[in-house]
Length: 344
Image (cartoon, rainbow, N blue to C red; front, side):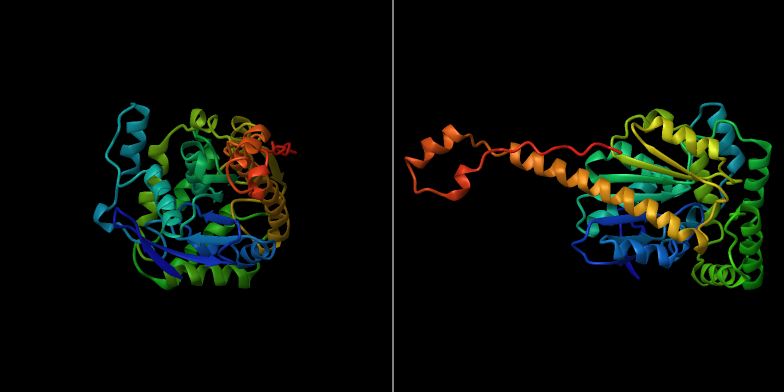
């Protein structure tokens, strides 16, 4: 694990796996979740497929900076402000968190990367794909949404349970909370084993910094409001993955997300909830690798086309130049229009 410091003074803890010259894939985790919620086995499958995988702790999570100076913001006040179309003061926004991703890319000298975001991480990735098109090779939005204009009663109950996180540093209480939440949002068709859940809970406890970080992130999500217009600006190849049995972000919102993004592919997984159980890794990795390979091919073709069309060299110009200087084999190259792979 390594850290970087952004211009805003935020320290981000991250891990990089795979060759540094391989196509980069940045994994952006969701609300209150640490980088290790991305299964190690999923990361390893992506590396084996030829990608460089980078996962990190969002601000206010895990080993990244805790912004405790912002205290305990009022979720109700922020929500009411959105309803009344006012802009309440918030510790930070999802766009601030998206700038953290750009800072990480800059530190790692990555002009562009494939973005894979889960839940809140999907929202952050969506913002970047719409606002920073040249830096996003592809987008994968998992168990995420474009908006939440209406909150069903069932979803509100889940949100309230999630918000009741332990506010004091107590190991057993924290582990009970993680276990209880898995019972609420876990995948009914792919239940975690007791050992898997215990490991997740213990790792989360060992790396937890600020209990209130979750609340500040939740305020950022609430403040973000409706992003449906923004999603229509996304041009990157996009894959939307959603669980048919997600109790936190209903599958209808995943379907809506895919419908708003041009040519986005939608994959709904029966039995999947709002987590990453080990039993789902083989299917998720197959979907991701297929999508990333096609997106990387698109990206390479576009870059080749740009490079070739930027060479001001026609056959006539090359012949004319050859009479004045010593022949150079490169002078005889003509621009070639690279075929743009069709999206399938």
